Image (cartoon, rainbow, N blue to C red; front, side, top):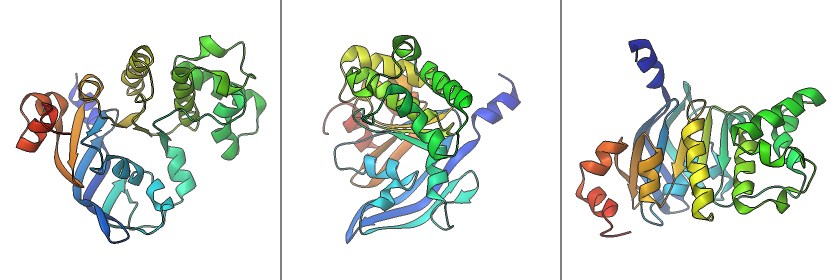
Amino acid sequence: MSIATEAVKKSEVFEINGMNLWYGEHQALKDIHMKMNKHEVTAIIGPSGCGKSTFIKTLNLMIRMTPNVRMTGDMIYNGSNLLQQKVDVVELRKNIGMVFQKGNPFPQSIFDNVAYGPRIHGMKNKKKLQETVEKSLKDVALWDEVKDRLHYQALALSGGQQQRLCIARALATNPDILLMDEPTSALDPISTRKIEELILQLKGKYTIVIVTHNMQQAARVSDQTAFFYMGELVECDDTVKMFSHPNDKRTKDYITGKFG
């Protein structure tokens, strides 16, 4: 790998410094410092209630839809400080897509689900929409399974197919970053493996942040892992190093199953 290629690989997409978050009087995130690199997968791990899902929802400011949320600190995305500058959240969420714990297709056709985002953002050309839908479905390895029934109800798909459809829907707006909050927790092992294989393929085009309770999944798919505990970022490091030689005893205890 050339020095130039390595520099591109390690270019920062997010830099978070001193971020705090409160729900009313309760502080859910405490002094978070973290960087995320382009075309890498960052896994967010930690026990239930530690702040993982709260954290991932800060990255596209979806957390601001929750009442009584207050945030301080710096969260720099592509040179803009999302916490200190006025942000067009519609444009931000176009660039930072999100996939949730359970596949949540709209009660529309497969085609209309994927075309939803591009249409919202002004794409009206029918040929361009068709190309975008086909590309997005191919990116998630779903095209061959649904190409003959694009106008069937999306809700008729299996759970694993629904989740891949939701990933395709997020990709259709051509984002920089894909956020995934427990994307396989409701899936069977075969569907889980397909999503994990998909994550490894997609990181060539996108930066991915995934929340997972599954230690093996974090080890399989991520380049770096961040361990959250009681609202604090205890440790963030290269995944191989984190799982073999963690710096903090709490990280080691969690990874080895002593709690959580």
